[in-house]
Amino acid sequence: MQETAGSYAASARETSLHYALQALKGRSLIEPEDFSLGEMEELFLLAEKIEKDEKYLRESCRGKLLATLFFEPSTRTRLSFEAAMLRLGGSFLGFADPGSSSSSKGESLADTIRMAASYADTIVMRNPKEGAALLASRYSSVPVINAGDGGHHHPTQTLTDLLTIKRLLGKTDSLTVGFCGDLKFGRTVHSLAKALARYNDIKMIFISPSELVLPEYIKSILKRQNVDFSERENLEKSMPEFDVLYMTRVQKERFFNEEDYIRLKDTYVLNTDKMSAGKEKLIVLHPLPRVNEISVEVDSDPRAVYFAQAKYGMYVRMALLASILGVV
View 1 (tube, one colour):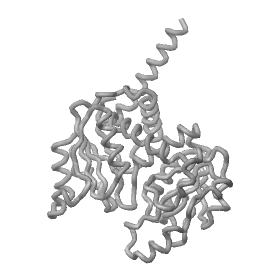
View 2 (cartoon, rainbow, N blue to C red):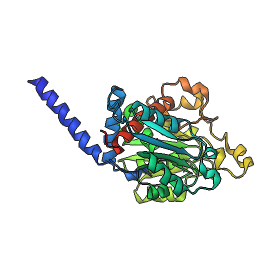
View 3 (cartoon, rainbow, N blue to C red):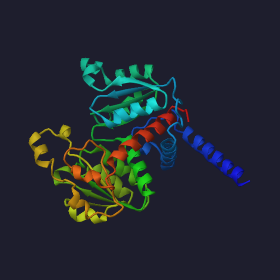
View 4 (cartoon, helix red, strand yellow):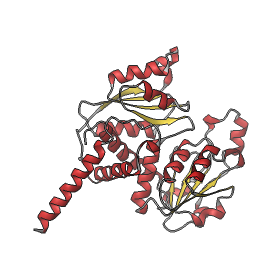
């Protein structure tokens, strides 16, 4: 009898998850707020199911095609989307260098998107211009997923970050989260800060040189939502407070003046000495690529989880693709 009851409960949960994720079918993801907290939690549940059983949803996207349009360099985001689509049984086409696309001939973004939408079932796009993903979604007849638009948003990295926190700490609320490095241009920081602001009892500590502080529009959002946050310049003194430390690189490609980049790039370097002041259950995240801001000696610390974080990114992108394509 217990077995029957257990099977019934599992079936009911599966049905509930199915109907919840049906609401994402055909939807674009331009910024984290496009999905409710409930919808994101359902995505995380699906990602966890896939993580536990990699055969789950295998072949579910057979016959589906993903267009990957990367107007800016990417390793993890592009490869994880392509791996996610292949693991779901689908295929992909696209480019990783705008020089190999017709944009180098002067084709407008709107025309590129119209063309790609006529071939593919969904589009993943990275573009150096802020607002490009929103513009693309207005011209596309298929869902558009923002893989980064300048220094603005990177919502699938935010899903990756939240899933990592949830899986490793068991919760996404009642946390003190430190952000360190390039907070001015760091789109992953902007997206994650806005997303975390929707959870309960979150404290944020932003650590950066004065030239790379968090943009005012993000601070305004946090103030409106009564988020407890502070801005500092010293990483060492803050280490004992963090449950999560989110390190970022200083982004050379966002600087107009190389001298400024060289002066600021090594402002913060996380090493074993600094890690020794951190909590036992601290986790260190990084959207990658890493340059000098985390010493390689930190990699062997079990609290350094940025490579596991990258793998969680594939699972959550599998869950996202399956949901917006309506194959769950």
